[in-house]
Every structure is written in C-alpha cells, then in structure tokens.
Length: 153
Image 1 (spheres, one colour):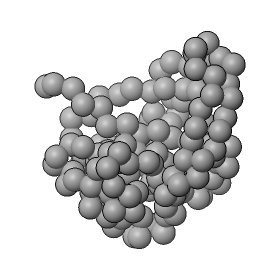
Image 2: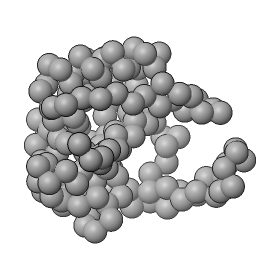
Image 3: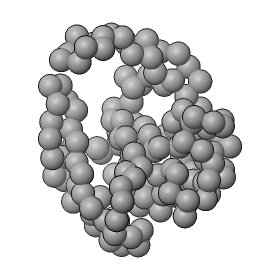
Image 4: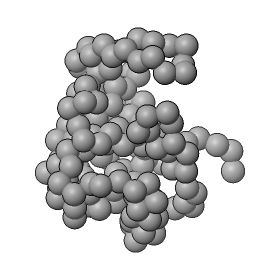
C-alpha cells in the first residue's frame, strides 16, 4: 500500500481468479488495510470501461470484481454509482455489453455517464496542474478506481 501527498491511497493485490468468496475476502481485507471509513458513504466505482467486450476478452474490469466490491459496500450501507468514460462507445453501451449492467440492476446501483466537463486545478508534484473530469469526484465521499491491469502471465 502506498499513499500520495493528499488522501490518495493505492492498494495492489494479486488474485488469480474471480471466485466470489475469494474476491470478497481479498477486497474486504484490502479495504481494512486502507483504513477507510465507508459506513453509509456515497461511492463512485470507476472501473476501466474501455469498450463493450465480453469479460473473457480482458478489456474492461471484470464484472465479478464489480459484483464482489458492490456487495461489500452495500453491506456497509453505501450508495454506489458505477461509471467511466469509455474510449470507443457510450458508457451505457459498454456497461451493458461487458456484463456490468446485470449487477447494476440486481443491486440497484446508479450509473454515471461521465458526460459532464468538470475542471479541477491541483498544485501537487505533477507538472500537470489542470484536469478535466467527466464526473465531479467531490460529489462522492469515496472514489474507487478499479483499473484493468493487463500483464503477461
């Protein structure tokens, strides 16, 4: 686990499959390690939604990962929104085609289409000082970025 100059925290853990019990255990331990206070939080889950491909194509964050984390957060009374800004299609189309929409519907989650243009300025260590977002991170108590890590086996 590493922490950035502000409240940013990063946790990287290996998991060899998407079996729900194993995922939920790993994610629960990860949330505890991060020391997050999540009870009743308004949470944005930001998976990598590059394109609406089936999960076995490994283009987007796997739907079972979204399911496991959502169920954990819902147990803490969180209000969850799922969203990203895909590279090639609309957010809604990608969520439907990659299998995340079934989870959104089943658990009553919200969707953000990332169609806003929010400008934020930051004077941190990065040479970049101006950032454009499709959703305002300050509208949420917690933003959880869920990238799809693509590495050779």
